[in-house]
Image 1 (cartoon, one colour):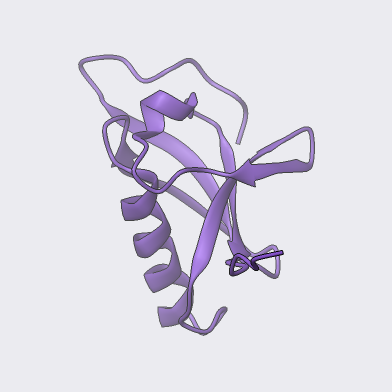
Image 2 (cartoon, rainbow, N blue to C red):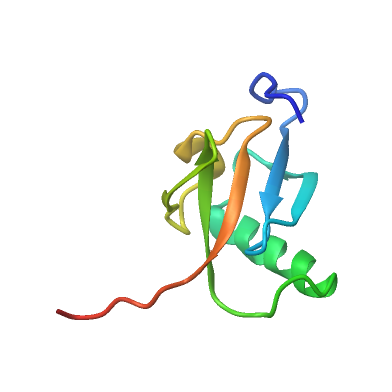
Length: 101
């Protein structure tokens, strides 16, 4: 899916590609700029579990830029707050628990 312009106020839905932990893509336009990272993560996990691509569990959502996954996005952030635009590629990653050092 080619990178397109940010969503317009008349059409707040974003065209996104979300990848499962094994790289399987889900091309979707079900999300809006004001949706939270937590909502997107939950719905993406549900989608991939229903399709038998992933197991249910705790996952983080990351933005992928130039084939490089960034840091996990904060669950309470809205997509517009973390610069997620049309054509963005997001990926689910296994949530790693924090370890006190």
